[in-house]
Image (cartoon, one colour):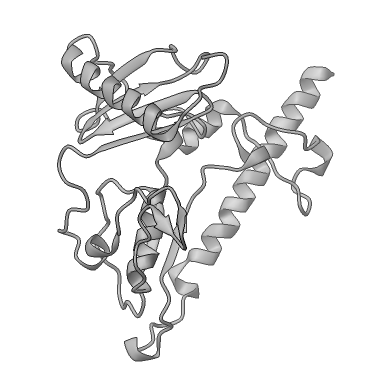
Length: 252
């Protein structure tokens, strides 16, 4: 009986996810989109829509929503770790991990008064780039480390506008280092090199190295073949820890 209830719950969760996806797809069909207006009549608005890889009970680990409430108003639903990884295909793992499956999301941006689609933007971008993008659009100064007489943490991102206007523009100089962490998981990226630390049981609990130019799915750890790269990137991690005052969880 217990197994049957678990199976029923699993299928109900998958059904809710499938129906939600179908409903969203219907909203996005081109046939439901009105014809574009002339540029001078379009709203002067920057629209950015990005996925969040799931939230709370929509995540890979489930939550407190009971099976009978699934699919009802205000309910959320998870669909399990392995299905969460399927949702992140072709990347590794899921939200909450420092792997590509946990940090890479699709996003759509529409510039003010833009007419027509542009080519896909394939450069590395970050949520930290949103603030400088909005400041540039608003023609507002970047406050740096001082704002209204107070010391603040400086903005670390870059404006996306150059690449949104003209796809050939490079947003970051070669060799730029990006580091981030969550729940003890961490990564450092420089160009196509990326080291990541995935906490058990999802990962080995040590630094792994991947060449994203040839292995975006992070399948082959090449740390042993590139010790100098690992040393350089772990030094950058140590610098990041000092710069932001990071305190890792006690189990780390």
